[in-house]
Image (cartoon, rainbow, N blue to C red; front, side):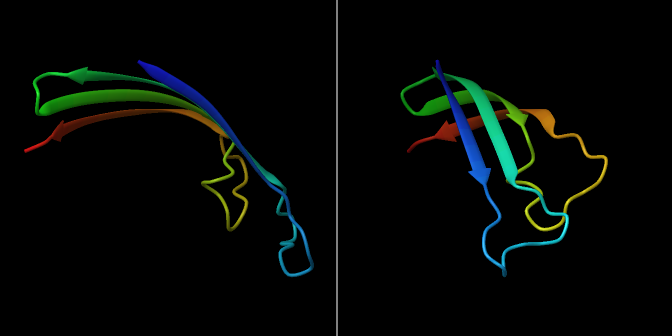
Length: 81
């Protein structure tokens, strides 16, 4: 089992980096994961992320009426040989 929290903030600075109507960007990620060693060479891992903010998704043009929080679920299988 594992978990983490990360927070990222981008601030508009300088004349060349300012885009009209483009706000400072924030994103927080709260995650929890579990890893299962099924055999010596087969690993299964699941993760759940709660993302608050769209800072890393919408970095070019602001999108009106968007939802800035969502859940993401991941699963993967690793085979080592």
